[in-house]
Length: 192
Image (cartoon, rainbow, N blue to C red; front, top):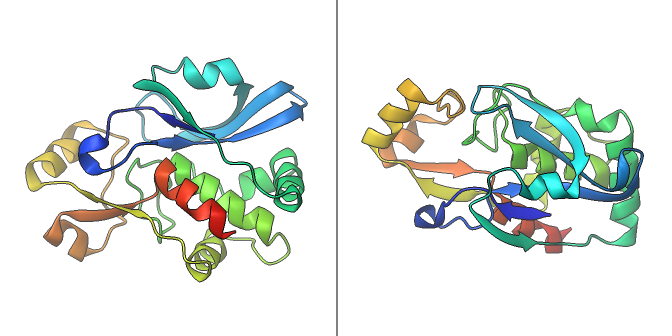
């Protein structure tokens, strides 16, 4: 399930946040399972919440993207999300622009992608590095966004949930950063 949490159209991003929606979850008939940044702080946690809450989180626009995985992947995802697997790949140190190929920080969409990898290859994936290798192997392509020098400096000084320390030097030199977005999650799903 995807939503437009903030207006990132100037960066070429439509869906800024992706989550899993489970029917008949112990927390309720329709429950959203996702990683959320704690009110602009530098950390995140995993939440199981009602579907209405997914849209009451001050979203920019009420538009949704929905993808329904194969029955086999649905079963694997449910087992992962209802078991210990959901926390294995969660990194609480949050950055909304976390590097998709590093493990220092994670954004909400990174957790979704790595959890998808864990569900698809449960016996083989135990670490974030393994999940990221699997994502590369199936052709996952993160979004590439532009962040200019002035914006980068302001974000570093005043925004605790935007961190640049896991990106390579080439990112700040070219002002182009690879990032996991809701859009990139939805582009991957048909491949797997």
